[in-house]
Amino acid sequence: MTIGRILVVDDDSEMRASLTHLLESAGYNVDVARDGAEGLLALHSSQPDAILSDVRMPNMDGLEFQTKVRDITHVPVVLISAHGDIPMAVGALQDGAYSFIEKPFEPRRLLGILKNAVRMKRLLDNTALLQDRLVELADLERVLIGNSPHIIAARDQIFDFATSLANVLILGETGTGKELVARALHDLGRDPKAPFVAVNCAAIPPERFEETVFGTAAGGNGLLSDADGGTLFLDELGSMPYETQSKLLRAIETKQYQRIGEATIQNVDLRVVSAGSSDIMQAVEEKTFREDLMFRLNTLVISLPNLADRGEDVLLLFRHYADRLSTIYGVVAPDLTPDDIAVLLSYHWPGNVREVQNVAERRVLAQKRGGGSVRQAIALQSSTPTVPETLREAVAAFEREVISRALRNENGRMDDVAAVLGIGRRTLNEKIVKLGLDKGALLSE
Image (cartoon, rainbow, N blue to C red; front, side):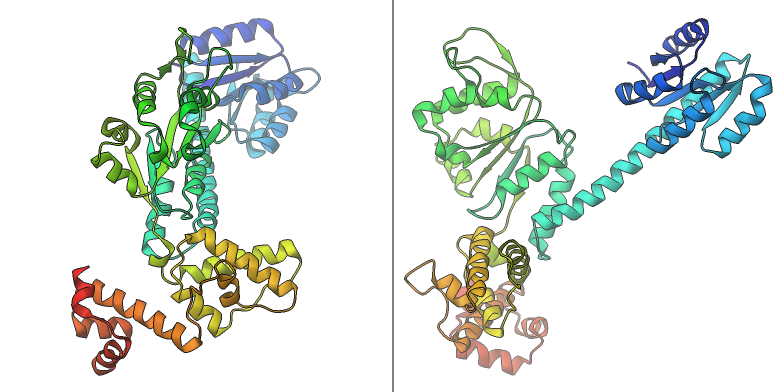
């Protein structure tokens, strides 16, 4: 196992050979270049952890070389200087070089300087990675928008699980953003440039599922091959044919499989991210989905909440999509009226986040025509009204939902419920009666 990669830049072939022997004996990989110009080319191709460069070289000397290196990367440069070059080397330190060593040098001292240089480079790499992760986390907040505890927990899990190699199961109902989460796990992972192959298991005819996943001798590669080295995302997991599950389990366990009709063993190395609704766990209990495969797929689990359980997140989501779509359609984003807000908060959102996006698009298109409301945008998707007809009814529906949730959260303790809601105990009792809430039924749910 190597301890790092060093780029040696020196016009003296004997010195290059001597340094290469010393560094390789110490456990480093070594790349060499004959001058600064060649060193810059090697810098891009070899990605060294440190550079060891002579000061005096033809064409481009070590001082000019280290200046150019400083402008494009934080790889530390250690200069080798003759005695007369020391003032120049000191100036180079002030200009960004990591260190210098005078000829003739003592090998242990050189190795000590390089060890520290490599350590510093890796610390800088880790700092840059942390900064990238923080930026990516901000991006993730745009993928899973909201401030509810459930969605904050889901974002934290994605960030924590992304760099793991373990398989992940995402649980959530239709429209909660399962594929977005799968994509975020991949993009925030160790190699975002690796393949990301998404497949909806429900969209593949059962009789063609095996050949689609494993490939065939006649037709070539399947999804496993396409995802090799990256992530295979299996959506609608519960739709996978039972007879195929044992073969997929074997492929995941052994990292080997065979194309249909072929005896040759294929190797595969990938991470499986799968997704399904809560029904998948019931399928395991009913033995229509293999328990042993589930154990392989659910090493890590992320549960996505329904939008109806996320409170005021719906307002943030609607504004986000309305602003984005208004830019696309070239109109001013519609303002939210009190009626719009009441409808957004009281509607039950069976299609979850995906439905919010659809409603926002209808509202923006209506704005382009000079009118419209959220109520009308929701009603367009069904001939049966799914939202309250008046503002009073919408407010009542919203109050009913908020009070019901508070009663459950506080286990029916009326003083605590009133305190959470910011109203008096008497007002709370009056609202419960007026709204027709059954406290006992709510607490038994």
